[in-house]
Image (cartoon, rainbow, N blue to C red):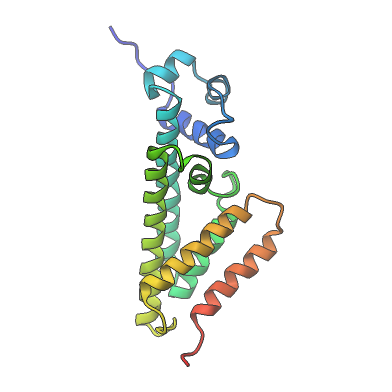
Length: 195
């Protein structure tokens, strides 16, 4: 008879996500994962198959968590500018219990060139974020908040590029105030008067 799991799979997945997020894939060992997750090595393999599968599941878990937070914040925003400011601010500061930066950016920069599955996960996450930005820009243009000098797609790609840069800088010692100034300027640039 199979034994019931003695741990909450989502809770231990969150712990694995945190460790991969902080250290990256290559630097994180199975021994560190087992210790950090608080489970036995056999349980890790029985539940998640191997380190790579656990890493990919951790990326999915990261995406679920971030997408849920972003959707809630954007929905509560009164204007498109407020929604965009929320997204940019979230990428700088995240949540209190989250490591700095972005697990997707980390995975892309560490593995995308040599790991097709990690590349696919990163690209899918980036596309979701770009789609969210596209929706915010479109709303801002329709409501007369944002410039229509550039297309929705152009502005969404431009903003996403800046957002990835903010995610990278958030992992460094660059002061948060400097990143928040970049975010504020990004919103203001979309409000520029038409020429």
